[in-house]
Length: 217
Image (cartoon, rainbow, N blue to C red; front, side):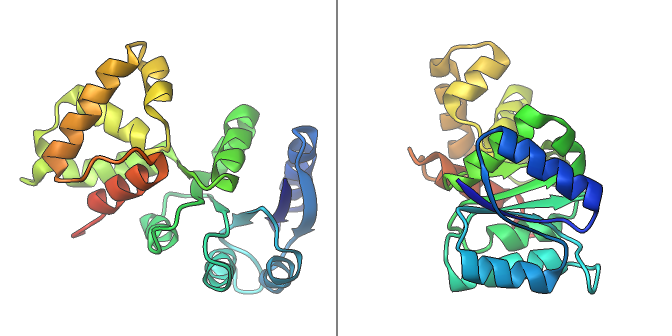
């Protein structure tokens, strides 16, 4: 699995290269600026891009914009964005085309090797990996209003949060130590209360939930 990595801090970039290589990834390029990232994505056609939001020369959202441009040129290009802080706008931009293969992690997650590598693999396979803190902020912003989200039970909210992180019903069941059948019942209730169509496609399911949570901000 070929990776293009963009991170301007040398020590973090080098650490990510070593971590990914240790887990069987091939690093097609490891770059430190927006222009270098744009060239690498265009010329190397990686299986997944792991991109810091803020890159030289602007140090604003250079990395994110390069990744979005690359996805427009190559729809569905898997992109995992790393950010220092929760920025809901970045999550919305990534999810906007609805094609999946996207992730948004806080840099703190990089220090959990297993979680980070799992997120890279999930995104590369077309899935979704959203940082729990992003989901929590979306839920907190919506849970106090009179929309259907307010009608969810505490357990359903917990299931929804795990679902929006990109977890399958089996993974949620294991996390909550309940049966997969119980989770299926909870997800059916969640979809009914949110007015969403039930889907067997886990990625499409996650995108639908996230789109609902972020609608009407």
